[in-house]
Image 1 (cartoon, helix red, strand yellow):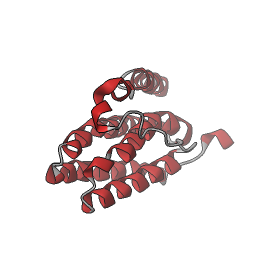
Image 2 (cartoon, rainbow, N blue to C red):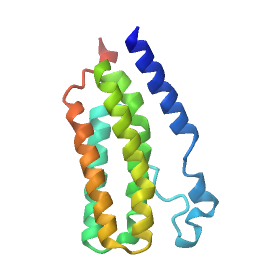
Image 3 (tube, one colour):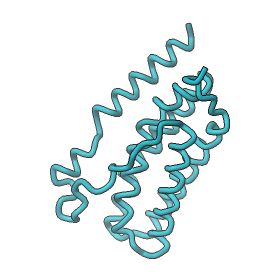
Length: 158
């Protein structure tokens, strides 16, 4: 019975995240002047939790390289892609992970999705130190989520 409650909570959270805080603010002019528009968020979300976390890690590495190169204005697209994947992680975790892992994954994934705005603002303002600080947070959250990737059991194949 407890598992059903957790799954229901995860599903409700997933719907709430999917319906709100989308990229509409950027399309409606939130970044229109900077040219971000529909950039980013176009990544194909992998079908399995482990692969999705690996993709987030790859995108995070890209952000790190951009920061190192001083290309802060180019951080937006990979950050948007991480957000898109992070929003799907709870759903993927339901399919691939053990129920006792879902709560932590849900919390960390929501936090990771929230870092999009956190990194976007200082990057747009050209604040390298602040951008690096948020990127460290992103890397830590991905590392936490990656801990569960080794427990991927592909329930749908049972």
